[in-house]
Length: 253
Picture (cartoon, rainbow, N blue to C red):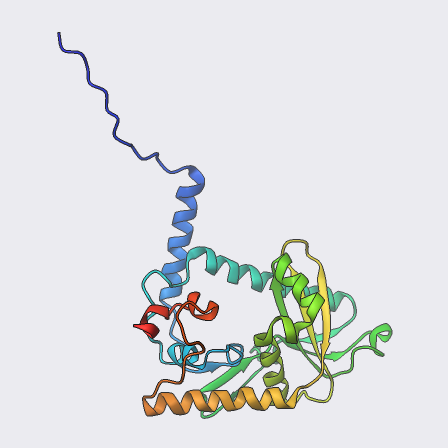
């Protein structure tokens, strides 16, 4: 009589309910994101990126390296950020701030320069502050809001937005310049996504930073028009900015 043999081959476990449902959600988000029309302009929120060549890749819609597109989780993080921004708007309005975020036609406030090839959309403008805050918050003031995890939020609180997040500071300066909101300091709000703590910071207009950021946009557009690549930010591909860049392989190959 032949004894039954044992099968020691690894058999994958079926997905859990959470894994199966999340896979469906993420696939739907990635598919939806893939149908969006590509942005044919340099975004003001990106011009503070330290690598000008990366901005060229973005503007020209150069294909990213394989498996570096936005994942479903990343798209969910973006969506959660918008929710925190909406919450902050409501909180400030309840506190008595007259915060305008849309025009009368319902459009987001913004600017378009260089024949539409540089654009920016601001989070809002504070046009009036409650009596108890009028000695602190001058108006009209640009309002920009970011959400961050606890580690990054604490860094912003400790060092200030200009030192902790230069890309945000460049965005604020550029928006102040193009929106004509240079007299009063911008009101920068950071929401801690882990604890719901709030940080508010007054950011005086930095004309030199605004000019440098605008000049960078011009250099990027001119290089793209000429078919030239601007210098990389680093001399080796292991530099931190290169290591996390979605065009790393393409750039260094």
